[in-house]
Length: 99
Image 1 (cartoon, rainbow, N blue to C red):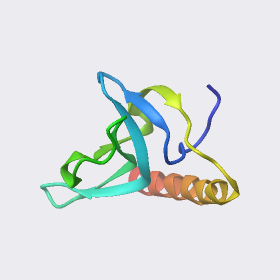
Image 2 (image 1 turned 90 degrees about the vertical axis):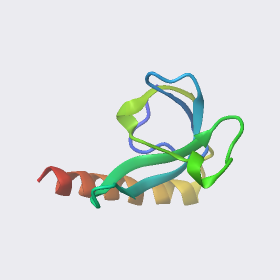
Image 3 (image 1 turned 90 degrees about the horizontal axis):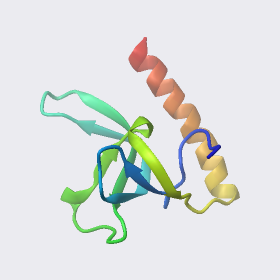
């Protein structure tokens, strides 16, 4: 597959060392750990095909954890414009965290 940057909402993936697929429901997510530090994640997803079950069953993950892509989510001009901004934001966030 030849796809660069963030996958769109609705994309269905399987993570490494996992048996259950996830559907991406959000991008550019931050989580505050028990130590109080913020951690950045590329995606948040829900189990597929069940979908949203509860707030406790949202899964944060990064692109490098994706083993297989089953379906790429819907894309139109609005989502492509958003993707462009989100991809730039991810690059900036990663550069700050590495620098």
